[in-house]
Amino acid sequence: MDRFDAMQAFARVVEAGSFTKAAETLHMSKTTVTQLVQQLEARLRVKLLNRTTRKVNVTADGAVYYERVIKLLADMDDAETSLPGAAALPKGRLRVDVPSPFARLILVPALPEFHARYPDIQIDMGVSDRIVDIIDENVDCVVRGGELMDLSLMARKVADLELGVFAAPQYLARAGTPAHPRDLEDSHHRVVAFLWARTGRPVPYALHNASENLQVKGRHVLAVDDGNAYLAAGLAGMGVLWLPKYMSAAHEARGELVPLFEDWKLAPMPLYIAYPPNRHVSLKLRVFIDWVVELMA
Image (cartoon, rainbow, N blue to C red; front, side):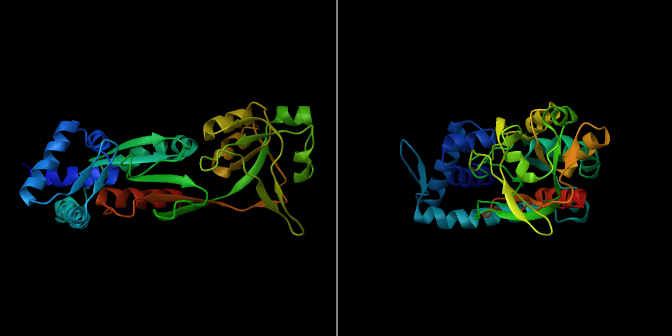
């Protein structure tokens, strides 16, 4: 039995709550993971997990052992990168999940520089606006806009995204240019609605100027749950958009989007990197987080 593999398998089963899910994320067979945990229990002469047909629960002894194991695995990871030559070259697989517009417009175009700096880090990138179960899916970190609802996660703010309101010229030619945000509630105006993953519903947007504070939801004929699709719908003239400036800038420059309500302000959207609270922040994750912060600065 390889004790390192056995401890890693045990820790993953505890985090995933399933031998099957643990095997998938470790790229092992379920049989191998099961055998490793069984061999570990036999060596320790302690029952670490309670297994039922539906789920796996950690025993009291297993919970104590798990806390020691994750610290030991973290120390081993640090040991591998503690030498002067190794410290500059973190390595290994990093699983991240990021919103689709952020990936397309900011992160992916900048990755050649990250790869040149850290050639031994392999990034497996999920691109979505969905809610990701970081623990069950064994994701190292997620990048998300908006306030974080899962307060159990560790998080670092990497930016405050400036927002604006925009529409395509063909939409304005057809529906007219709204003079006031409340005009978007009128029957002849439409917005493109964005379905937020945590609620599954569109949310109103808060705007303010020197004398007014209001919330606008607007009427829609199309609602989407993906940032790239949302932008494409606005460019096609389906309605008014609320966008981070990084998504609108190129289209404004080409005349494909027109800014609206420029004397009004929207609260900026915070952008966070979130990661599991019970895991050691490995060197490869630390340098990725620092690089994203540097990129957004």
